[in-house]
Image 1 (tube, one colour):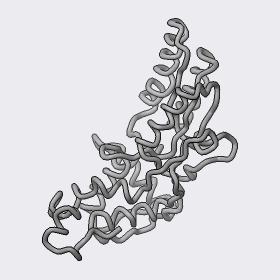
Image 2: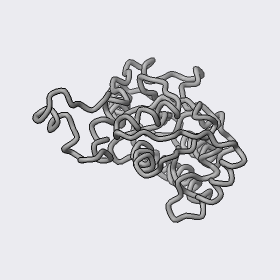
Image 3: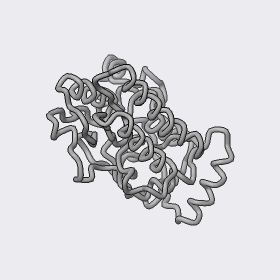
Length: 247
């Protein structure tokens, strides 16, 4: 989710390449194939991104039937395309658009939690399953933006955009070299990105996520704050013990 690619590129990355890898794994006798897909793709089938992800899963299981499919919610870390893009925009824009009133729900999972799940899947010999990978919290898009504002020390107006205007802005952004929003991403935002209840989750296989959104993003949000690294607790506490970054 939130990848900025066109339809053919989606197909190549999410469908063709995984299928080829699965064939090679079977040919060379590998015992385990783990594919990282995406959460919520069964519902958002009007999205090219989701359709390509589902096609990729199908092709993998045809070629490597005991593959394990991991479907994470939004994965975040210091160089992601989610928190970093939002903090950059919140740092620059006095008014920030809210699509679908910011009600879309996510269960953001830190990259380290996801790698722990992958390791657990391998070490415990978990085969032939779809596993939904979620973080310890369910957070709406509006709440995520509010949290990021606090972490970077900015106060912005979050303005709900009517759908026709949202579609118009997405069409405009798509023409840019590095679009802020595409029409396909807008379609994805109609759907919550949380566990479906239809499949096992990482909690069910014995590896709950332990990293919380605010705590982890705080570790790198200083790059968008005035003063950079000198705005962190490490430096602020030396000069004024009561001046701390808000949690």
